[in-house]
Image (cartoon, rainbow, N blue to C red; front, side, top):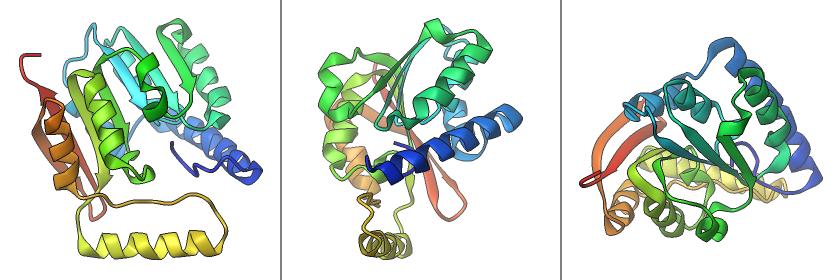
Length: 215
């Protein structure tokens, strides 16, 4: 779900360009910023399974596989990332350890197995129904749910409204959302997860780790 989520030709071209740049950036620098934060919050992933929702070219799952995770599943709304993701997997010789799927995770959730670690990096802000997305992600997390989302600030919510107005006037089908953090945590709690950590990065982003008791 990284980049523009529209399925128009413009959206597909935009996402392919984003995918190529993301791949080049990962080759040069690895993961940085809030992506790195989530990888650290994942802790010891040796032998674990990872479900990366909306992960674009799959940088976080690649990092966790490199840290010892056994296998990963990627569910990405846009198919424009698949070519670049495939190249990265082939370069590392781990294509057989990753199942990449194109589709809406919430709609396709029943066909996806539960995983030890579930990752939603900057995805919550791309999905209108936070209850459905976080609830489905929590149900799939056997041990840990990792998220990055916009900080819960009035100025950020105002900024989101301005961005969406611009997108509407531009006739772009994509919208962005600043969901309440208390709602995200409450939905996850309803599905058996407990908030462990929240970390802010600058003014905009916040990352969180929620765990399942007894895991």
